[in-house]
Each structure stands twice: as structure tokens, then as C-alpha cells.
Image (cartoon, rainbow, N blue to C red; front, side):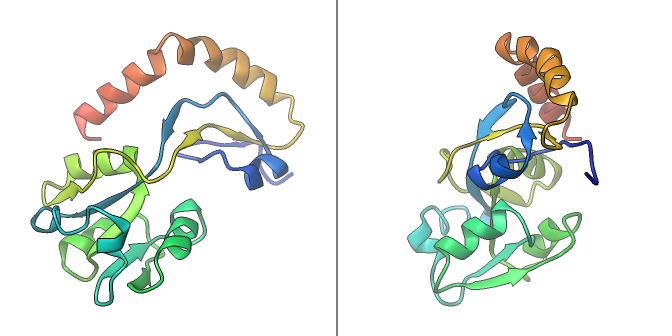
Length: 167
């Protein structure tokens, strides 16, 4: 009861669905590595990332951290609490790679030309949706507001325009 809704890259997971409601998924995405352009070919597979000496940076508390902790057992995991500066850590060489959602990789590589995605297809797949307080009357309103624009491709078009602008 401390919130009505949350929006912005929220992965629909079984654990979250058990505790909250979701609007319709606006896109399907998954965990994808991002690294410095010079290291693009170095971090293509989990086996290449999960090696001693590799520093995998992650923001704590969400699906990025869960995926990283499940898959990375040999590389060093670096927790970085500030989402606004996490990509500068890779650029500065204080971390080597990050696993995050493909949509974020696309946005950040436009913002920072020093960065590159290292894979065409993500390791995972999950819907991204608005998260709503369980049993909220807003759920039906969000559904009514988004179902048609999602089905018509309007949300995807707007997202592509926003990504193209790099903002």
C-alpha cells in the first residue's frame, strides 16, 4: 500500500506477479552484456564473461543482480548502487562488463559511444510492464489505456523514436 504504480523497465517475473499486478507488457527484452567497444568481442558468451579477472558490475536489488549472481560464479561481481553513474564505471575501466536489459544497452550505447552491446540476442526473455499495487482499481484503467497502443505497435514506435534521439 505504499505505492499505486511503478513504471520504467520493470521485468515481469513470477515473484513480482505473486505480489503485484502488471499492465500489459510493452516490450519483451532480456539480459544482454554491455562493455567498452574495445572489449566487444571479448564478452560474447557467459563462459567468456564468467572468468577470473573479469569485473562484472551490477546495480543491486533487481533482476540484473539476480541474473548476475545466478550466472557469474568465477568473475568478480562489483556492486554499484548509483544507476546514473554505473556506465561511466565501465568507460573508466573500473569494471569490464554489465548484464542489463537490451533496451538499456541500446540507450546507453547511443549516449556513450565508448560502449557497445556484445550480443545480438539476449540471454533471457521477460516482458516489461507497469507494476501496480495488488488489487488496485488502476489495473483495469492501465489495461484499457495500453492494450490497444501495444497491439497496434504504437508503444514500440514511440520507444524506437525515443531511442533514436538518445535521451
